Image (cartoon, rainbow, N blue to C red; front, side, top):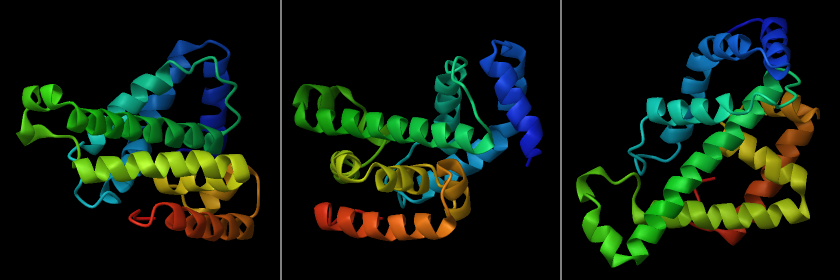
Length: 189
């Protein structure tokens, strides 16, 4: 892992328009992002055939277009990365879910290389809708779920990203999980 101040300096330089700093940053954090994405994919218990490398490469492309973001620090960067990974997984789930409903797409799509099961796609879409609803009731709890579940951040990393205590993150995580499990009982939270 790279020194916090080195990453923060690269993030600030990248925000200022130094594309070279963005490239150096991505090389430095690539393995950490890959580990984060691999952990996220493991949580899907085999329902996703997307590889960690594919997820991180797609996330890398989306993050590299974020050069105008006012990056605050390493935690802020990884919080944004978690959001990007969530969106990628949900885009795939929505695509799979819509393909299931449209028989014409289903017959054109090779079955041997589906990105995820239709059951898992439905679960992710349902979880996303419930998370959006939770965000209206408690934005911080929704953000905790996003960072922990989709981003794979630890309690401590989530606390740092949200600038709250670890105890607050634990409490929000437990409350949010209980609420979401009532909304989406088949979820793997």
